Image 1 (cartoon, rainbow, N blue to C red):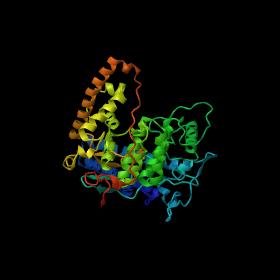
Image 2: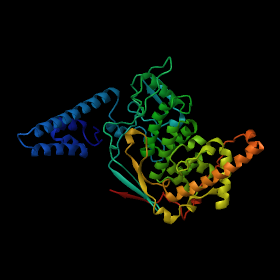
Image 3: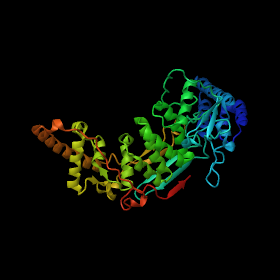
Image 4: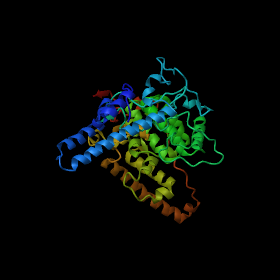
Length: 465
């Protein structure tokens, strides 16, 4: 049970002991949803026949629910007494504070964990979440429920989250308790489990993770440790040092090729940029895409980026989204991607006058009005998993899918004719397949985007209760 920073832990405990069966402690800590459970259970007991078993059964439920609250409270109190201060009590003692001039009041450059001094990589200074010690900086709460909308020219993007992010007893996965045991492995250690956390690692795994904080760009380290670091950077995208966390994630993406990491990190960078109205950062992300594996993320978000800033789709982009366009005959795309790409470029040139295509030529303003919206999770971090944002669903637009499918079918037919001719003259056997090259189109300013038809996702914010 999470206790807001403006509520006394011991007042909560007293209320829990003497009035806990009525859920008063939940009401005091503003956990209204769980307080309502107590109310519902007591209403059932009160309205149940006096001679039946219903009243007895639900009374037992109430007692068990009450006792569970006491056990959970004592567990976290004991744990925090051993390993560090409660996250809700650290608010007033926050170490990583930003001063009026934008500089850190205390620079977090090193850690002392279980007697071992760890020098953080410069890119991570002030970005690591610490539960105790000199550099403790963790505050797992925000003030109240918030709903913020960004109204664009043709659709609205909004996000919301609660003070506890909907998670009871779930703390920041990357949070470092400096007193936890460390052991330098003599042999290789078991890889971290899925959705790992620092406190859940073994002593040997913690040692390995701390080596990552010294050099986060070590490609030999298991991706599970990278995810622990990444979870903490996600929290900065939401509540902390957005700019430096954004840059750190971009650098991590440039090195760690794991598909899951590329997927989650790209989605978070795009959606967090939307949430904070940081169009220039979204452009930084788009301009960072210079390796094939960095495109392993949502087709829908990719399309939103390209549409919003008037970036044309190239043949390689369309080929990568063949499945989205319901084009299943991908044999030539897989075996002869270079030939297929060149052919598709020719098809684009004939149909649109250029070897690429602006999405605004397919999805015009009238079509935008038909675009559906969907609520999407922004982060993979389980402690902030409930932060969501409404985004338009472009990749399911029938007109776009039909246009792309038509282009791919025409390119497939022409590629088939080309390959047949190459087999006859013997050139196919000598042909060396080349890697598809997608020309890098760098946009330096938001103003270069198509201002008439773009999605304009960075409009004026509207705050609501």
